[in-house]
Figure 1 (tube, helix red, strand yellow):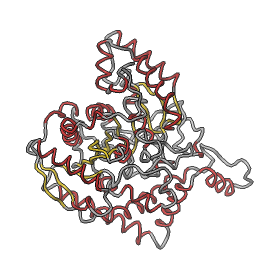
Figure 2 (cartoon, one colour; figure 1 turned 90 degrees about the vertical axis):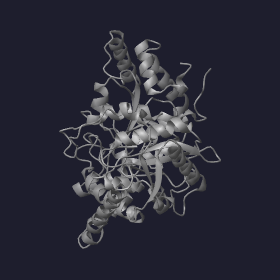
Figure 3 (tube, one colour; figure 1 turned 45 degrees about the vertical axis):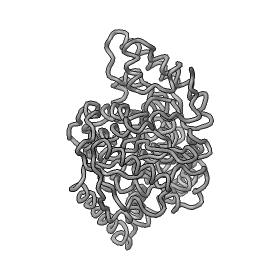
Figure 4 (cartoon, one colour; figure 1 turned 180 degrees about the vertical axis):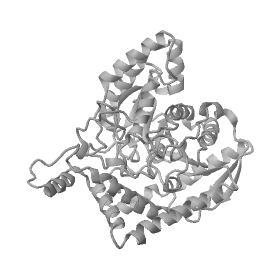
Length: 492
């Protein structure tokens, strides 16, 4: 397809409806791009070629009868490899689940299937979603389409890369501490982390259950709204799922920002911020002001404690959640063990990578007798303070604007030997998860090397519609949406 590089999800849906191309042609174009640049970028763990073409053929039949299921009918979509997919292996980027075949679909996956979306594959990630760079995968590091020597961000790096490289027209990821927003920033796509409870977590492999949330990646804000509408809403299979109705997100996009108050947190513009990142984000905020918004400083005084709080709570929950991988019920097991305890130990030692082991150990320590109150209990109290900071800030503003990441994408291998430096990559995104708030990243600039920069927008609980409206206004006035990474072949 000659216009594949410029095709958005919304435009593809319109093209299918008008008969300008078929769903089979769309799927073939996506699979062709995966074949062409996927081996370099390593963004897919599993490619569902036959299933995608079969689903596309079914979409063509429905569309031909004038009965498409939704705007997503016939649209190529990718899934982070933590989503359970019936009959399609789900690895979580780990050896311990290298050949696991789920017997059912997770809720978000089922909703995409019900909408007629075409699944092209499962994307690479940091093992069990634990990482900020997508280098912790048992299937090798994923690479940034703007510079393959740079990381794409993690843990949902493969999904962000798949969208940026035009290997699909949308993708799903999960965000526990920034794992959607950080890759979106590094790869110059839109990534949305909804309010905790807005999208069902049923059928995703858990990392930290009180922090995990499912969200979309897309080429632009309208596409992100389409995907979020499709997967959001109450699910009785998830006890943390909110019954609050989902508004028609596409309908509010063009409402503009006139009269809105944009809070600028001073703690997010501190030492360590790359000058080009600060300049681009402040320019984006001035652009919102030029469109009719007002910007004013706000304070999030406990933001400096978010990193420590997150790495106590998240690792504690991971320690509990990952206890189920024992080689008995599912996943790989050590066949050479002679006792049950030996089987547990060998299975987990061989099956988990270094970062997963590190976090299990940290979490087990935080939950151990004599340390629970000193670490886990105290972290929960600080989490409450962080949430109250946001409540106070939103008393004087409608949306908060800040950088998504302190720097642009760093070189592959640059931080692998220094876990603390790696953890600091998420320092600007963690608070949103701790507070259960919605946040998104939208492209707002590039550094001197051409590496993307993201603007992070944070809202009140269940204010995804407002965040998308503000992001859309920025997108329309800034012009950053038009950039295409060098790896994408632009055809005449």
